[in-house]
Image 1 (cartoon, rainbow, N blue to C red):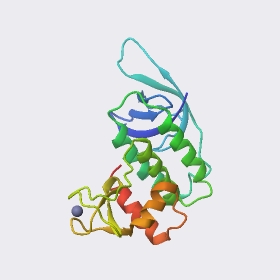
Image 2: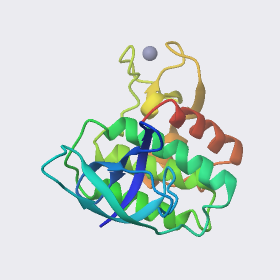
Image 3: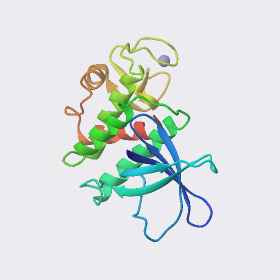
Length: 205
Ligand SMILES: [Zn+2]
């Protein structure tokens, strides 16, 4: 079974509780420490076998094989990937069964990271996630006061839009926001704008 490691918690001694995103669900597994285990890390893609037993309510994580990403030794790519993974874990952690959308989204993103800027890839993936969850609003109504803003809007957490009177922050022309939300591409955005979009993304999915 394949999955992406979304969370790792150390428990007694060197044992770990590992949460893995598979196509259908978020699996929480127990991993005993052992010198022959291959190393695992947040955000890694692994192949594994979950072993269930009557004695334990949690399955054992066994036969782990790391399906490494070609870019995972490039520090800034791995760093941004892991930041996104941490946020995704917070976003999904209370859900058991999932649509394959989330796994496919990460799988696709991991392939794009090979050649593209990590922040751009992950912002674009996040826009797809928002659209999938029905949270990408293009009516330019301020989420605080409900007034429609005509020229520019402030982008807040979850890429919600507010008017400039209600909140301060990263302000973009509505035309550019429309382009971004509709194309889900950062092609027309400068690196400094991408940095700002990334900062907003880091506030939480
Ligand atoms: Zn407002």
